[in-house]
Length: 347
Image (cartoon, rainbow, N blue to C red; front, side, top):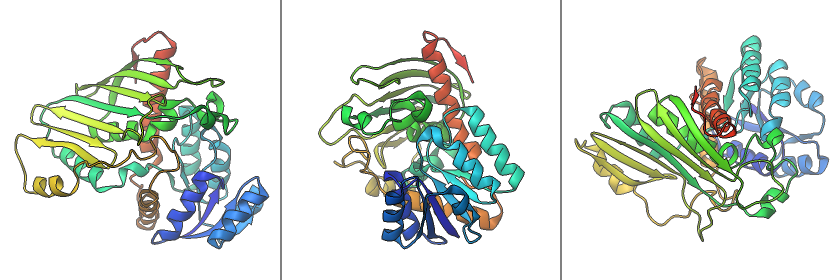
């Protein structure tokens, strides 16, 4: 499929690298309001450059777009792409409110096009093994399901672009921006959330509207309890990995980025030995924990390949709009609770 990228910033470049490396797709065009940025990215990757969205979408060869604009500016370009008959893969979060997400879902359905999200942290061997164990019921009665994202961003990060740290275009702070992939992983593994209670604060940054630290208590539909702790105040030399931890009556697994700190089950299986041999945690730096540019593109590549394959097979991708809606529902409920003095919010 021929891809077009909307937004030629840092994320757009990640998309271009992933499309270059993927099977089943090639980069056809790039759109950005800045002629200089669009031309630079297009030239580097052998694509056409546009600054006008109507001309970009009028190209009959273009089949699918990726959207890498600021979080709260996903709605308009994605709607335009869907209404022009293009499939769309949108960066996290799909949008910053459920109403906007529902508008996008309705447009995709009306136009018979696939709307998917970038949920790239689902695409690594550790997550595959973790999900398999959860689906097989290896934890027994799940008791604890928690996520910890103790990251760091300096003031210069928030000052680097006018949209950063705003409700309108960032949709939130440490939770919505930095932590949404880990929140997605948590509910992907542990199941639906029944209720949340939360507290948020801005502790260490100036001139931002949103939180830089959040703590939330979660009750899951299956009865488990857990915590989400999300921060951009937690400095460390190499950066703390994002952690997802599940524990139950028959086992515990603690994932740190792409490796396991614990893989421990009462009833062992043959594959456990290989997992312990190949996927246990070493001394890797946290991916994106201190530096937002320090992420792998192979997960984006696999994400894009999965969407193209799903379109070819006439099915919903595993990173469908319905899946992408789930973490935003949890995060917006957490924000609602925090704004109401920790009131218990039912999802």
